[in-house]
Amino acid sequence: MLDIQLLRTNIDAVCQRLGTRGYTLDVATFQKLEAERKTLQTRTQDLQASRNSLSKQIGQLKSKGEDASAAMAEVAALKSELDANEVRLGELLKEMEAFIATIPNTPQESVPVGKSEADNAEVKKWGAPRTFDFPVKDHVDLGEGLGQLDFSAAAKIAGARFSLLKGPLARLHRALSQFMLDVHTGDHGYTEVYAPYLVNAESMYGTGQLPKFEADLFKVPREDADPLYLIPTAEVPVTNIVRDEILAQDELPLKLVCHTPCFRSEAGSYGKDTRGMIRQHQFDKVELVQVVAAEKSNEAHEELTRHAETILEKLDLPYRRVVLCTGDMGFSSAKTYDLEVWLPGQNAYREISSCSNFESFQARRMQARCRNEKNKTELVHTLNGSGLAVGRTLVAILENYQNADGSITIPVALRPYMGGTEKISAA
RNA sequence: GGAGAGGUGGCAGAGUGGUCGAAUGUACCUGACUCGAAAUCAGGCGAUGUCUUACGGCAUCCGAGGGUUCGAAUCCCUCCCUCUCCGCCA
Image (cartoon, rainbow, N blue to C red):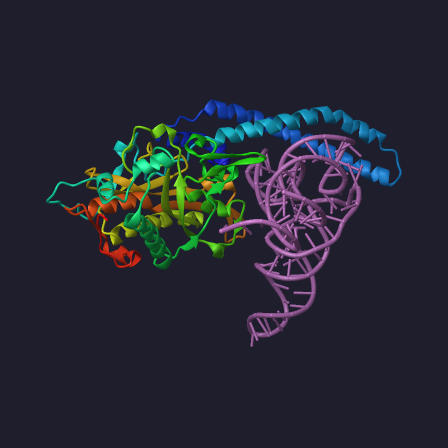
């Protein structure tokens, strides 16, 4: 959520920034709501002040046993206007909040302006794609050839966009998440978190999935209680740890890492990546989350992105880093780097991690604050990034480490997690 | 699933219709004392919103939402959460 003060005092600048991401702010609606709010709120508060002081007088008169009927008549005269104003003001504030809640974050100045994916800018490239002296297969042919990846069984059990892993490939999947967690906790200073996979609507609102993106979520209705939602990323439960909290200076930065399955409905994305495990309803991810003081967030964003890159480097997987252009960024983000891993089966770089700085956008929605040097409360900045998406990392390993006979060499860094196995072959 | 108890400021904890945004303790900040620290003493110290150039004023907030009342932390209703005991369970 954007700062309403900023909208009041500097709406032109906000408009301009939002314009770069193709979002047109409805200034007229905002100003109409704001004008009404201002008169109504000041009037309501004046009436409340009168009522309060009259009520106080009544109390004093009555305690002395004197006649309070004059003051009571005066309050009664205020009452109908006050009641009407309070109701209308409540509605208006809700309207205003709903309006602001659907405005996306403003991009940082350093974000390239653009309309779509095509305008994202490559920042760096690491590693050279391997040259093969045999025809490369994609991960589906490789996994099914090994007899360890079974989409038809998954379809029977659950439906399209699920996958089933067996044997060494299932172990490799587990090894990857263990490896990632160990690197981030051991080398990068993150604290491991285990969190709920089902969350309430308030949490989804806090990180920005609600109210706008309900269609992308799996919703779990309940007979006698509010519905819960399956998390689309660990970002939701982990970032919401600080919702409605005031953190002490020395608690920051908070660096948390969490491995969870992620569930995405993504009804609109059918037709794209229908083959294989690139786009699934369920996938595992190791998520990095940082909560930092406002002035530290850009620095933290670079650091966190490096932490994700380190995993790719340790696995010796070629990748590139792109900075998303204004038009391709997520709703809540002020700046996002995507890491794209090389997939020989697709002859292309494909997204494997997304690292974003949300600045105070999420913190404002969830009232996550810290005390500054003057002991005053101040919104924190939140960041997160995949470190990494486990399923896609598995895909990358299959395709990059394939051999002519269809077997897969295990990257050296993962061998300790595979009981020393160096190669996966058909059973 | 059954029975009971409870949710008040950073923490602990009083307050059962009116000078209560809330005693007291503790934590924290400032000052005095001290070479310094501790102890002691004095003062300060909630959040959010709103109006104001500012000083500051006003409003709202005692788990959440409704209700009664001139007036609600306090009374009534609904919901959420926590704890204790019993049952069940990986």
